[in-house]
Each structure stands twice: as structure tokens, then as C-alpha cells.
Image 1 (tube, rainbow, N blue to C red):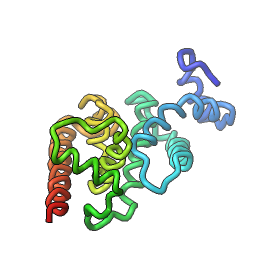
Image 2 (image 1 turned 90 degrees about the horizontal axis):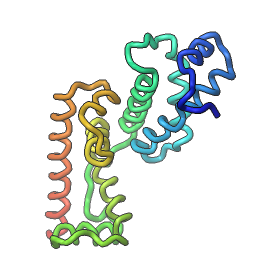
Image 3 (image 1 turned 60 degrees about the vertical axis):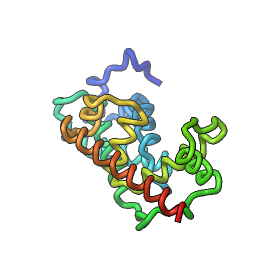
Image 4 (image 1 turned 45 degrees about the horizontal axis):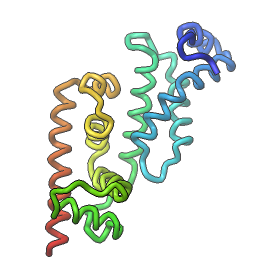
Length: 196
């Protein structure tokens, strides 16, 4: 595996454009950690990590002639990765409504604790809380899911999100505001349904 510090990306890209298979393998090895990190952060349900990563690399190779060098190559690939994940999220069937009955017993218990108690969720309930957040996020549009994951869960800056997505800063802020408002409504809606 090539050393990331000494990897000659421009040289490798030139060889890939000349159909050098060894260079193509080196490029995939070099970019694989970054692509997998993006895929894991935005993996749609019922899609395998390896399948989505392969699809991203296929898109990269089929579009490599379009890369003009305006942004660093890894940023260009990360945009392909993020867009591919969003496309898969869009393609998924969305449930028409998320109900209290859709929660597991543990998730319902965690949500009830959060709604009725000022104390933090117990550490052993962390997995159920994580799954609950995932279910609530799944009710949002793919772009809204993405901005919440990047901004709130991964703690990325507005500038980093702009770089990854190609969106401008104002769009990121507005999308985050609206997504948080939608999540709040979902949460309140679950609370009301549980009480009725």
C-alpha cells in the first residue's frame, strides 16, 4: 500500500488516464479510507458498505476525464461519494409516518427517559439512543440527513461541509436550521402519540 505522505497523486492520475491498471489500484488504495469514512457516515439502510464504495470508485473512474484540477482530487472524489450516498437515500422508500409503535422497547424507554427526565441517558442505553436518532433522521430528506450528520454528529465546520457537498455556507445554515426544526417536530409528535 502506498504511503499516504509520499503518494504521488498527480503522477498516479496521469498513469490512470493512460489506462495503467496498477496505478488504478494504487489510487483506490490511497482513497479507500476517505471513501469508506464517508460511506459509513451516510450509509443508507439495506445497502452494503462495500457495494456503495465500489459504486463510488466506478463513478470516479468513469468521470476521471472530467476532473480539471479546480479543487484537490480527494475533495472531488468526496463530492462523488456524498452525492452517491444522497442518491441512494433518495431511492429508499420512506415510511409515510414514524410512530411510537415503530420503536423497540429499549428505544421507547430511552425516549421516555429523555422526555420525562432532565438526567442524561444511561451509558448502557447509548446504543438504543443511537438507533433512535438514526430512525428519526431516516424520516428527513437525504440532504437534511446529510447536513445534520455532518454538522451535529460529526462536528464538521460550515466550511468543511461546503467543501464536501459543493453547497454555499448560507444553504448549509438554512438547511441545518430547517432539518433541526423537522427533527424537533418528529420528536414532539412521538411524544404526543405516546401520551394519547
